[in-house]
Image (cartoon, rainbow, N blue to C red; front, side, top):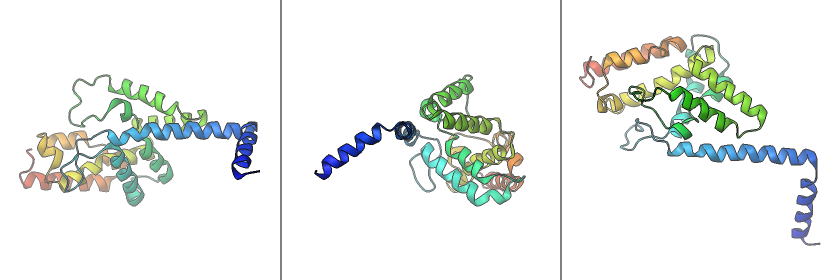
Length: 217
């Protein structure tokens, strides 16, 4: 028998095995989800990569905050489960596949944003096998609530990254959109709930931008 014939026979035998069929179906659902959230690479944010004119996409942002969590977790206010934080950050913005990115300093006209994001989470995570759908949806809701030590730290890192980008892009989105120091401090104070050192660093960045004249009080 040719190799082709043997391979075809093996595929048929595998397909007829209930346990393997279940595993194949599970893998298919997981891969379908991965393909769907690849669209996150097309969702543009307001922030630009350091030194670049183009806008970054949400997938790039997600990678960066995951890396930051791995490097900076020692600065969390409380003891945290780093793997849980990493998993939260890896999926925290997948809802933007359906909803798009919302500029942190301008959410006017998006009163229904929370509802839209919840629907997006239900659709996207619902593509996965039931156990993973439940688990990841729960992690996403935990991140959004910002109440657990892991969610507080994850949210702190998620917001602090913009301070790094803007401080190395001559004020970046703050300058472009006329964001003031008081707005920055008022809308990002939750960084301190997850990491006091990161909030201290964030305030220093704002102070430097204010002193240099890049942003207004």
